[in-house]
Image (cartoon, rainbow, N blue to C red; front, side):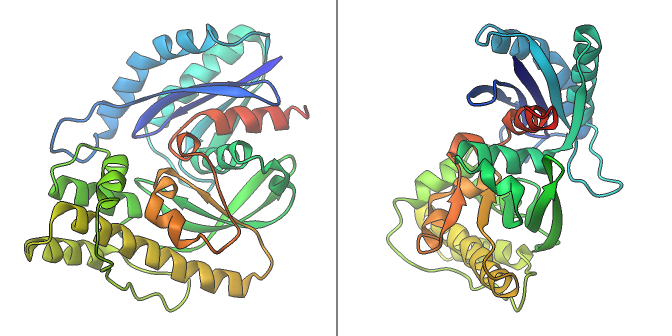
Length: 306
């Protein structure tokens, strides 16, 4: 028996299977023209609709067993009014498949999927049965969350982060400044590894909230003063890591004893992980930090009481 998962974010088309222990995720990044920072929702939706059949066919060639249930990301977050058209593609595909197979279809948020994928791939699904703190750091989100069990699933409540520019947006804009492809996370990470300096912009973080919009100006100014690309990349990433670290310390002070989990594509960054080397933080393998459908598949399995 297996469960299937679908996730159609504004960056990636994903489908996955899970058998209770192991699983496999198939993903493909959406095509973005050079020099552009993402896609319009209508274009992303159209791309997902085109790609899902072939992606699903490739997925089913690699798994065996009858389908028990389907999990799908239907919205960005649990919050009321949370909606993005790109998730309609996965929701529609999952709904038709569920009807054809006569199996239940479970709806989750994209954020819940990220958290579940991070926990499963880090071998920490035990945390789904207790409260913990988590960062969701991605192209569109920089949120510090209080996460707790909700039946056999989980619920996430925002307690901090940034309300303006996300960490992923800053990274992609820095990548564009340096002529890197979109999304720029991997390329910027690799480039920063050649940096020799230690400069960073100290982001003000008096509590759990901070702003990254000013960091973008600082990055442009730093690069404009003649800093080479690798130093500019490291400057941007260190500035983000410093802000996340400061907010985390405030959160752990307010919620002592809670485990700390990182999810989202930005959490795979080497400088960020290095900033938390002395903390007992849970980081998952990079392939399950980025957008994927393993989270919905895992959550569907749990919802079925398996």
